Length: 431
Image 1 (tube, helix red, strand yellow):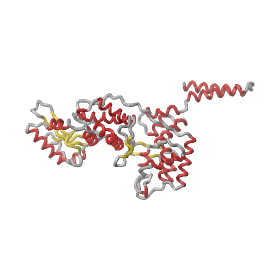
Image 2: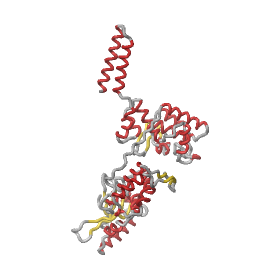
Image 3: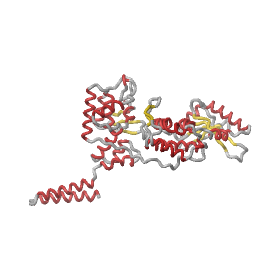
Image 4: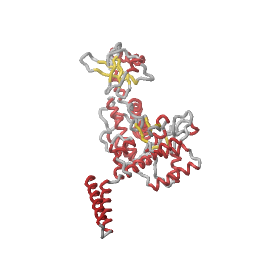
């Protein structure tokens, strides 16, 4: 970017590029603005100590926004450059100070500055793992003192439930259950945090690199046709008894669309396209996507009564905002339907399993579900009708028909051979 005076106007108009871009101030040498591809804008200072032959060093002042305005960042840059003129090296002093950070301090710094490109749902999950597992086990230790053995010990402790707690967090968040899955995810988060510390020169290595995590099998629970009938009857019974119609509709939509729970609960009416029978979601776990709606799903939406002034499809209690929690009622519903192990997310799996069993290609199923990787949809491959088996069934059926009729008339004999030839051709194509 060309050199110009850094002001609010120039900062607001700075456009992200394919890589990090730098805007240098034309009045205060060394004062600059870094713009990342994600759009994050950070003020910084660049300087040299010891003359022209020495390499340049940079200090991050802070992200644009409260409290850092262009003028406040400029004032801080002047203070740093004045210290350099007096022979100090602020970057080295800052690094020395940060090397004494505790793991708890690193967690806070990572959440504040290292999660720029993460989605809010991922950050909430990170906060939970930090609160329940990382801080209790390593929080008081110095960042520079953590070893590979410490991380491996944390993996074992979380897996065996040492940090599990029946209580929810103070903000009403999730419980800490521990287990192998939680342990693996916590180590993956630690690995990212120490990579962040390495980039900030808080450590010279990453003690979580190369640690093998548990191979946790993803739960795959699919509703059978008989189970779907039981669930459908239970939903109707609950609705007749006065259950929240928006909650019942939410559960139906989870099964009829294959959407995630958050996508349905956060759905707003402006995202519902009845003309083209689809949902146009501006954001999801995998980014913006279009969810096609079958006739029954569309009818479910059309029948829902809109609450004046409330943009959410699944209205909250009293018609205000969105419905936040459906888990307690879901537990009652699945208990009544005699499906005690059925999770809400299994409704999404069931949608995909029905599609695979009915002959829909995995590519189409993945597109409906919003999968970005084909391997994610591959878990449903074993549920699809095997085309080779279909062809073999047709051939065996034709042969069985002949075996049951020892004396075939000429026309039936010809018909049998035509069927057999067609089945053989089909089998050859599939193989």
